[in-house]
Amino acid sequence: MKITEIIAHPLSTPLQQPRWTAHERMSHAQMILVEIRTDQGIVGYGEIAGGPQTVIVDLLKQFAPVIQNMDPLGHTEIWEKLFSLTCPRPGGIGGWDGMPAPLPRNHRPQIMAAIGGIDIALWDIKGKAAGLPVFRFLGGTRTEVFTYATGGYYLEGEPLDAAAKELAGFAAQGYKAVKLKCGALSLKDEVTRIKAVRDAIGPDVLFMLDMNAPYNVQGCIEFAHAVAPHDIFWLEEPLHWYLQPADFRRLADASPIPLAHGEREWHRFTIRDFIDSGALRYVQFDSTRHAGFTESLRVAHYAEQKGVLIAPHSVGKLHAHLVSAFGDAAFAAESHGDHSRHPLHHSVYQGGAEAKDGMVCLTEAPGFGLEIDWKAVEHYRA
Ligand SMILES: [Mg+2]
Image (cartoon, rainbow, N blue to C red):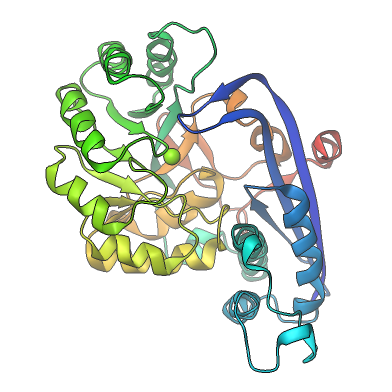
């Protein structure tokens, strides 16, 4: 089998209302759907989160001739070939050896995102070629995996207990675990929000905090002690963007709450050092943001050996396959409690894994099992 075409479909739609995390304003839902065609008629689909979309689409155009005519089942060779473009190589300057010149360092996050989208599409092709869903291809048997619902984004003018109503609604839908965006307000106001959520969801629902990097180590230790009485399951991405495994380790040593981290990491090498630090109980590498399913698998195998539980960030429709395949070494996939958070996921994709009663239910459709609603693609095309 040979790759014949790589097509990028950048999609975007305004959210009903702009919302904030502690770090940034979100006015739109966005994704790039990556379509890879083959000479045998099998078509694979991948997804890229992140931007700017124009930069990533340009990179996909550059990558197309590099992997055209390669065997799409050779995902490792393709991954390594694309990744190698991020580094100097003998004779590589100017692209005089027939490959693109080493890619600019200021585009690294977009490069890793583009590799990710291609790689996910290759796994979709692989499953379709084998006639198996990806989780079965990997040896998984679980057709239902635990999931949690994320909410509590900040909306302008909302009262502090707004998130409590929202997350209690997720619990009423059957979710046994919910995750609250936090970290944007004063410690006092955050404790008020968090107490309101715990009171609303009751004692039996697992309750995670998604922090989006608002603290230094000392500030986060104070935060952790202030919120711990509300039975918090994990602190996610607690520390500022520049802080490293040693800092997370200092936090973990002083925090009564376990740490989760990984969505902002670009590849397995930084994840390795976070895992080796002993700071993390949960690792949240995101194949749609960076480096794809192949890198997620590498991360998952390493985490399993080190006793760190796998909890992939976002896009449960894809990542549930990984969670299924890793048995007790994986904790959960992530879901949107509310479709309005990402209207694209809930209209462009038809079929595939679906959240129901607190579990993501996988199907036997080959690959990732996603049908594409092309009318929706045209409607949301950026
Ligand atoms: Mg997060």
